[in-house]
Each structure stands twice: as structure tokens, then as C-alpha cells.
Image 1 (cartoon, rainbow, N blue to C red):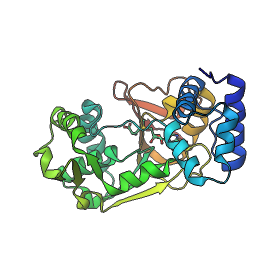
Image 2 (image 1 turned 90 degrees about the horizontal axis):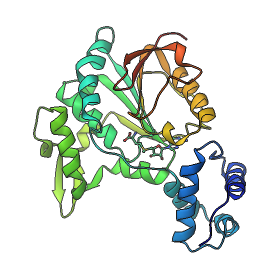
Image 3 (image 1 turned 180 degrees about the horizontal axis):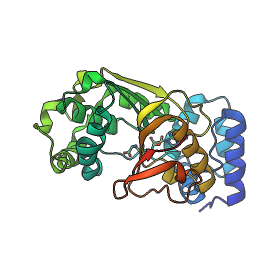
Length: 274
Ligand SMILES: C[S@@+](CC[C@H](N)C(=O)[O-])C[C@H]1O[C@@H](n2cnc3c(N)ncnc32)[C@H](O)[C@@H]1O
């Protein structure tokens, strides 16, 4: 079997950077390698050069490749204890001095995290007091988020999480089922704007009270984590909250001293200094 070598991976990442302005050069190499290897096997390419040749002039294939390279796994109410903390501590705290709350889901994948937020806010009677911007690098997955259509078979896990979150209603109230698909209630996301945005190369485009960037930086190396965290810090109002994934940490990053830990277990931080 053809094994992708590190030098080839670097060449591939450089090629993509110059041709498409997507920067995978600082993605964690082991995960990038596994995924490139999978694409090569899937399409039966003989080498990385074959893959590079296949890109030329074929935008659709490149988009497919991006989807394969990025990890899109997600769930509704992923880490239910985190969502309880958000509902019981973070949001009430923000409401003490905010009439309106601005939320950014950075790396929202297919939108399950956004629906969790919308369901939570709707149960708190706050849906019309928020603006939500949900972004991802992967156009295809963002399209899925926009549609709000999910496989029925995934709802079992989502419902289990919702029950552990201790939601107020029946989870089934939030969608309709047709054949083997569920269609989320569109009014949940009336205040949501979906946008393609690259956390690595993209600009700081707004300021928020709450930024969720969960299970995204886990695929970045330390250099990239640092530079993305600087952008996330800049995207927060002072005393705004940052949430990262359960397996991620701020401890080693250069910007750690500008945040205070609100809840270590749930990876919730507060911007403390500009
Ligand atoms: C594992 S999913 C996390 C989804 C959700 N936040 C969660 O925790 O369930 C990671 C997402 O990050 C996105 N991503 C990866 N690199 C990115 C980048 N440079 N800019 C924006 N999004 C990126 C991927 O496309 C993917 O949808």
C-alpha cells in the first residue's frame, strides 16, 4: 500500500496554501496524514502528486477534499453538563448587564451545536434577545447546517444528551420526521446567520459576548492554536466568555493570562484583559 510521507504532506499543504489560500500547514500532522491517506485510498490515487493533479481546475473536487480533511463529527447537546452550566451560570451572568447577547459558533460543522443553543435559549425565553453567527471553513458542511436536516438515526444520541441536559420539553417537539430524516423547526434559527469563515486565514470580523470554538483547535498544532486564540480573544468584548472543547486547554497558550478560568471542567473562560 502507498504510504504518504511527511515531505509529501508538507508539499501538499504548501500547494493548497498557494493555490487556494487554505492553510493546513499547521494542522496536527498525524491527523492530517491519516485523512490524506484515506482520500488517496478512496480515489485510488497512486501518489500525492496524483491528488494534486486532480485538483487542477476542479473546484468541486477540492471542496470534497476539504470535507474529507476536516473532522465534522458533532452532536446536539454534546457534553450535557457543559450546556447546563451555560444555561445556569453563563447566560444568567451575561443577562445581568446585557439586553442583547451576541454569540459566535466558530467551527459549527453541520449545525447541531447551533440548534442546541437555539433550543436552550428558546426554553429560557431568550431567542429574540440574541444574535448568533455560525461559521465554518467547510462550505459543504455549512450548507448542511443551513438546511437543518439530519438523519433520524442520529437523533437517539441527540435525545439522550438533551435528557441529560435536563431540557424542559420533549425533544421531539423541535423537529418533524419524514421518512428517515428529521427537519428542525426553522423558527429556532431565525436569528442565526451562517457564514463561511476560515479561523486560520480569515479576519476578526466582529465582537461577541460568547464565543464557542469547541473541538476545532484539537486538530491544530501549538503554533496555530496560539494564533487562532489571539483572534478569538480579539473577537470578544471584555468580560465575554470563551468556550473550548472538553479535551482542549488554554493552559499552554500565550494568551492564557488574558483570561480567567470560570469552569475548568467545562472549559469555560472569561476575557479579563484586552
Ligand atoms: C469536530 S467539528 C466540531 C463541531 C462543533 N463545534 C462541536 O464541538 O461539536 C470541527 C469543525 O471545525 C471546522 N474547521 C476546521 N478547520 C477550520 C478552520 N480553519 N476554520 C474554521 N473552521 C474549521 C471543521 O470544518 C469542522 O466542521
